[in-house]
Amino acid sequence: MADYVNIENLMEWANAEDEDRSVLQRVQKAANRYIERRLNISYDNFLLSSSYSELPEDLTIAIDMVATHWFTYRQEYTDGAPIRHVPDMASSIIRSYKWPKVI
Image 1 (spheres, one colour):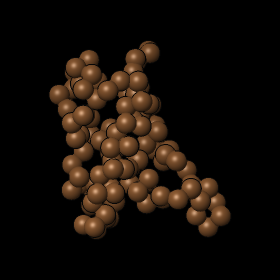
Image 2 (cartoon, helix red, strand yellow):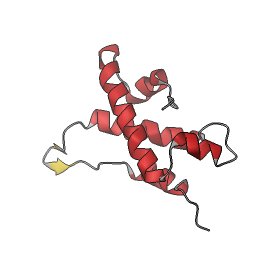
Image 3 (tube, rainbow, N blue to C red):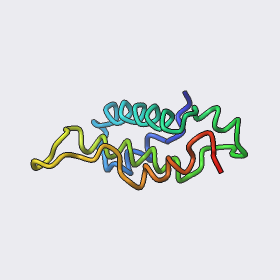
């Protein structure tokens, strides 16, 4: 799988330190797999089956959002409240690209 999100940009997005790089890279890979499953198509096949030459910016932002959220909230609960597993905005973006498109 190609890296569709630059790790440097993701580290900035997540406000991560250099020592967090390896953890964030693992979370990024998990976020990529999660989003591909939600899209019902791999990124490579998505690009082949669409008019896009690269992933749309809002979809890469969704990857950043999911990875950053999972990186930031690595435990299931904080202050006694459950953590949302995926931010609503990221879910909305992912749904808008779900494959196959039904019109």
